[in-house]
Amino acid sequence: MTMPNRFGELLTKHRQRIRASMNKVGYAINLAGATILNWENGTFMPRKNHRDEVVAGAQFLRLTEQETNEFLEAADFDKEYVLSEDLAGAIFVEFIRELFTNLLHRNPPVMLLLTQANWGEPPFREALLTQARKIFSPNEVLHI
Image (cartoon, rainbow, N blue to C red; front, side):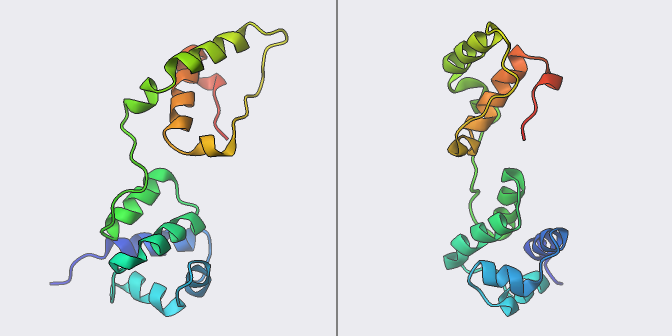
């Protein structure tokens, strides 16, 4: 009985979604296109020393944090992003509440809030968005 190749299925799906060839994915992560083929068809799985390449592949494939975690787990690696649902509501609460309170009282009101690039990393982005949705209506909060 053949074991399902979830990693290969995900790799194929995400690669095809961005219309990248196996060779292009391989080149982007410093592996041969034949390695990508072998991963996709289940001939081989990524070795333990290929975690960095699999993470680089997730980035190249433009995967979300959730997709990246699923991708890594399918390759038998630990998750890259560990974020409990409660953490986003708990960190920086006072700072963010004060920030939004100040923004609410500005004249004219703030229409757009930009953050540093590294704030895109969990759990900071989620904390900011969680608190924004508590203060503003959800249809007023858009993450781009």
